[in-house]
Length: 193
Image (cartoon, rainbow, N blue to C red; front, side, top):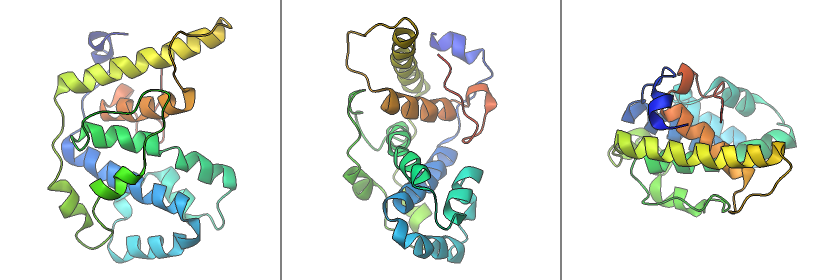
């Protein structure tokens, strides 16, 4: 599918602040998944700073679960691949890892400010949304990668390039959300190929 075709599917690129706030919420939830024993400390910090609006309905349910099922923690930990896309869209990283390479999560600590009362302001001051052309080019690349994998699976074939389905589908989710694909929200986003 080319970018012009996607534009006909009721898309409208989200603004820089909305993407940045989504990245921050996703980062906090990802931190909880990786430090689940500290979940209550994170939730208290969220409540004390009135940051509840940063999170999707599914993320709120995850944070409220006591304890969260292990599969849910694993699923949330994969959201680092969504976060890396949002950080790229916000101009905070120059390039993305290959489609078969998980992102290096230590970069999050370098790019996202410490969790304090200035968390949002500090982050918003660092971001600049990439051009519409760059965003559509990334969407095209990711959609093509995802399509190759799905098509190969349907036809019981192999593909000629290294692509990891788990990585690509998470990245596809994020770029579709940025482009407001079918006007769906974060939790409801689809990854059509």
